[in-house]
Length: 131
Ligand code: C2G
Image (cartoon, rainbow, N blue to C red):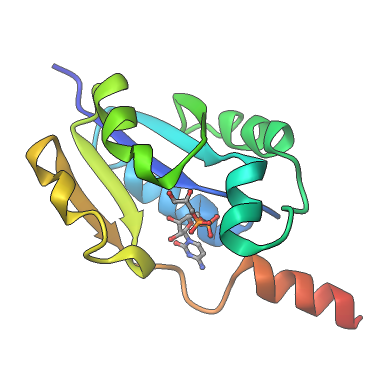
C-alpha cells in the first residue's frame, strides 16, 4: 500500500522554507497531498489577506515536483476530515505547531518538522517594503 502524507499551509510569497518542508514531507511517504489555506481562513487567522490569492497559491504548490495533489483548506478544525478523506497515513506540520495536533494520532502518524531558520513570508514582505 502506498503511504500518503498530508500537510497544510498558506504558502504565501512562496520561498525556500516552504520548498524544504514539502520536500521533507514527501520523503516520508510515496504520495504528498497539500491543503492550501483558503483566503478567508487566512484573513480570519492573520487579520489580513494573503499577497497571492488562493487560486495562485494552489497553482504554485500544485506545480511542484514533490506534490501529488492539492486542495483548499477551508478551516483549521477540519484536519481529521481531510486526513480521512485523503486516506493520509502521516500528518506533517511545522514545529511552530508542535503538540497542537497530537489528538489526531488515532487516525494517522503525526510528525512535526523543524522550520527552516531565518526565512518567513512576513520577513520578506517587510524587507521589500523597506527597500
Ligand atoms: N515553513 C518552514 N520554514 C519556514 C517557514 C515555513 O518549514 N521558514 C513551513 C511551515 O512550518 C509550514 C509550511 O512551511 O509547514 C507553510 O507555512 P505557512 O504558509 O506559514 O503555513 P501556516 O500559515 O502556518 O499554515 O493548517 C495550517 C494552516 O494552513 C496554516
